[in-house]
Image (cartoon, rainbow, N blue to C red; front, side, top):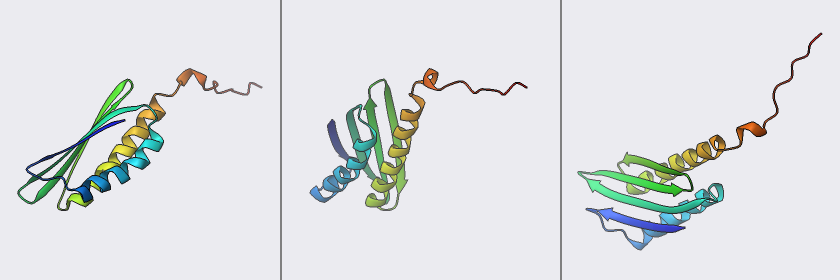
Length: 106
């Protein structure tokens, strides 16, 4: 997986980079088909914004969040991204593989 972390009006420190990569380990367990991830962190008048663009095979996901604390924004962003990937994974399952419901005719 290619990972790119950028900061707008914000210097990405090693501590924040390690925090993001630690949170991404959980997402890697759910998304085996993750090709690349771009995370953009920005600060605008005491509002910390975190955005993630995930490129999966067959789908691109965009998730963003705005919080007062950058670490909280990253945590909430990863939770949202995890839910979005799980939802995509469940949707992309083979629908025809499920057996048709059987009705009891008497």
